[in-house]
Image 1 (cartoon, each protein chain N blue to C red):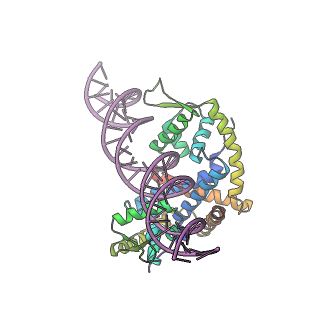
Image 2: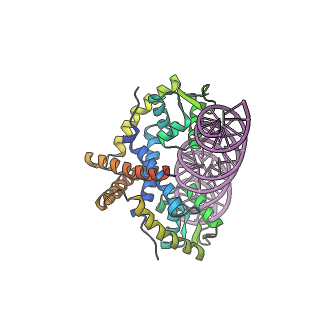
Image 3: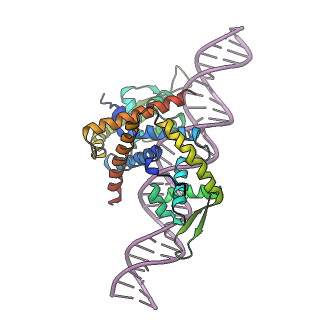
Length: 147
Length: 147
DNA sequence: CGGGAATGCTCCGTGTACTGACGATTCTTT
DNA sequence: AAAGAATCGTCAGTACACGGAGCATTCCCG
């Protein structure tokens, strides 16, 4: 009797948004490479020779998930993972030629996909949505870090 | 060099938002029962004797995931899963007494959590955020259904 | 310099989330 | 009534996502 309206719950909406995006990504951008994988490739483009922990901080993936994603990309030959000779605890990551090529292709198609994804919104609404999500996510992530 | 700013990508923001919510949920609402599990319990409160497929449509989980989530809740004794005598393909789901009790407790704590989650936003902004997400998600889900 | 603390990674267990293949059941159409 | 189509659920495989335990390495302090 005390049932609640899930349509007003941000958590439920966040999950739906994320699921909808994943589905659209797989049809419009790539079936092989996922959105988190693209985030990793993209970070490696701007910061070569990064280690897994720092990479995880940038793309917001925990140490375990980074290891998984990186392992998959390495298996496909899109990046190299080498033990850092200067610090034997770290893995140094770097894109291969092929990885850079894959990133280029995905970056282009991602732009197109974003257009489709946000199509129901006016320009001002798109900026508002992204800004609001960023503020909520930033605040929640700060709570986590303070621990 | 062609690296992209992930902060402007709705997919990346959607993932961050969902992750942040999951984390906050586990600290403020429950460690045992997840947000999707609550969505299932909640649907069973308003619609007893529902089958898994219909349930999945309501909470936006595919058939496999529904089966997983329902199995976990059944294992904990929060719901009963019985073969429908009128249609041998379906499982009929119904909350147990304990399941109803768990739902009551979660519903209260969920309200409190939503307040914390949306704390960085003004009232008008909260409504705007939820409305914008719903529009984008609705549109994307329609694309999927049309298949 | 030497020993304890901190750090980076891996491995394991659990929980979403989806697709494809399959089996059982029911429905439809003739 | 029987063949074929549609439906519901399960199972296997893959990919994120997280916490805890454990290991090797490095850092820091006395």
